[in-house]
Amino acid sequence: QGPWATARRALSSQLIAMASDAASAEEPAPWESINVLCFTWNMGDAKPAEEELEHWLPKGGGDFDLITIGVQECSYSDWTRSPQRNKKRRKSLKGSQAVQIPMISGAAEELMHTLGSSPGHHDFSPVPITRDVSEQTFSFHWDDILAERLGDGFVRVQQAVLMNMRLLVFARAEHCDCTSWQGGPLVHTVKQTYSATGLLAGTVGNKGGLVVSLHFGPVSLCFVSCHLAAHMHAADKRDNDCKEILQETWPVCHPCLDLTNQFDHCFWFGDLNYRVELKPLHELEDYPTLALGNSRESVKTDASMKTMAAADVELKFPDTDHFAAIDSLMREGKYRELMTYDQLRCHRTAGKAFVGFQEGQPTFAPTFKVERKTGFHHVQERAPSYCDRILWKSLPPHKANVAQHLFTCAPEVTTSDHKPVLAHFCISVSPSLGELLQNPLVEAMKERFPVVRLSGFKATSLAGTASTAEPHLVFLVAPLELNDSEGMSAAEKKTLDPVWKDHELPILRPAASTPDQLKSCTLLVVVYNKSVKLGCVALRFPGFDPSHGPAECCSYSFEEPIVLYNQTTDTGLLSGRVEVDWSEEGICAANAQAKCPKPGNHKVRCACVMQ
Image (cartoon, rainbow, N blue to C red; front, side):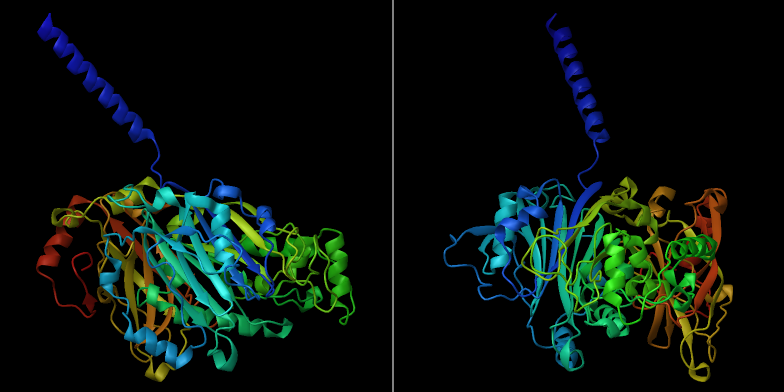
């Protein structure tokens, strides 16, 4: 009886352990669903009322995993922590209190960045960069009252500061002090930078952008808070401010990319200052739909939606009375009609700014310019406008993974001539992305990567002078942490409409072991003229749609606008065909070719993933 009982107990323990493991396997990983709060507010250089935080920031942080808070014009008389407040040490990641020198930009800023470390392949290691949680006394009143409301359950991950602009990112404490991702915290690889675009030809930081990037498990996230040029007539300057921000915030990016095409998800918010500019409908330009970054298949749908939106608006108004016309629409709650005349919406459609970004439809009145009291009481000296905005953009494989559950404002906040705007997002993460980044790559696995062949690539209407042009293509694969090499095409000389022969294009071997993993990867094609970047096209690998053919060997053709720093005006189009081969025969042939490469006409910079 003794031995049998012992055996039964051992078997029972084994079964219980197996059942427990199975239950754990069915539970979603903590990074598979991320709740994010984005908040922006121009504070009007007035001290905020601490009791008014309750109108937008839940006590204890609610169910959010990340809370990002961007403010502008945040200078007020007692901006340092009030003497009567008890000094309290708050949880922070070490190094999160770094503050930029506020008054410089231009050549001096470039020099400072140059003296630091320029991004290179070593910056994109799959090994997370972690920081310990420490405790600090917050010197800024605004930071302190936010931390007080969030409590000990949240940690300040990073702040970025430029004159009267601040960007703060908080994360739930359990995500910063755990071993849930590769033996370390979920929140890792945190970076920050800034760009000044203000006075004296952009050398002063009264306007500009602040950036914090981080990884949450396998997901790369970027948060941009900005304050752009003011006044109705400065819409084009605002577009250029965005371009300058993307050009100057390269310290957190790969040298070939910018914020909007490197990270899985980029959230951009702030006082963007775009105005509601009323024009009769016949004066609205027929903007090209392709500028939005859509493929030709979606043109018909977008055009019909634009026609329907225009049909809803029948405005007759004198040119001199913007306020009365806008006020009439506001009183009737016709916010969708107001957005038809929003400068930012028009410029997005024209490809002049924020190409490929998404934005919620406001169901509230314009947030500027209002009297400093509860509710909406707009000041007649300015045309009421949606200056305060929250937009987001995702790489192609992840576009469907962001859901905006709430987009609203806080009219109860009384201390500023802007009302704050906030949005709640839920980011869902494919388990295959976690599997891709969590499992270490071994040399033997690299010989099982799929073979990606490129054909029929051509560009049309590139920017530049044809007689001196030498356009070529650089190919990158995201996640960059696993794909540390670049493939390069041949350079086509003296043409702005280059056509590449198939043998002039590299063969790619993206780091993915299964078709599901490849669905989480992005092909980034960067167009250059000599050393001048002309823009980028982000593509999914074939296999995400049944029309691409059997999983073993699938392909599709594309034609996309080239995006340069958020813009597609005068950048041209790129088209071609991408084929993925998972067959044993194709992989073996590619492995043999890699070992005995034939001389070709294209240059390839490679480590071991691309050939």
